[in-house]
Length: 192
Image (spheres, rainbow, N blue to C red):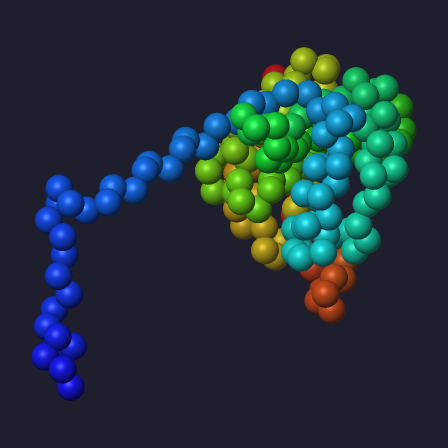
């Protein structure tokens, strides 16, 4: 062995070391969704369909289906928000959809929130859900519901609890995805 192989690695003096530029701050704007956002919304949602048990859908949604959903919730006056980066990329979305298709339930909606995988863990989910709750109040909704998978969605359960949702029930082994049985947790929040 050569002597230099045993020698400890030398470090440059501080003033000669390359300083890495700081990572730019995570910035976004939350605004109502537009039809132009739907391809990004579809990509975000379909990632979770194909790769996780966060959604119990087993089939991806087409752009046509997202356009239909967008038109429907817009016609009903329900909130559909997106978080957009300064470059215009959709980082996540939150939507309220009718809970049950009966007139008596018109003041109750099911909310859903999905983030681009690279946008998780940065506070965006909390910001989007907070904005959605405010938009739901403005739309006249009285109750928000969330149905969360009981496996693999611990961060979603914690977020909802932190924002005032409480557990109203559990259903065990009601869905099957990736060859596994999954239960759901029902959460509810009064919009004041």
